[in-house]
Length: 50
Image (cartoon, rainbow, N blue to C red):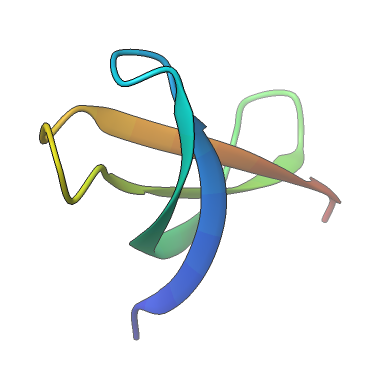
């Protein structure tokens, strides 16, 4: 179930809306992970503790 999030693309150096899935990192933080619609680079957005 992909949702739309707003994150910073390091390659484009701009904030972009991207389709992403929620994943939990090793440290227990929830983050939205997806790809930039312009350049295709992986974009992450930290959402907070799970």
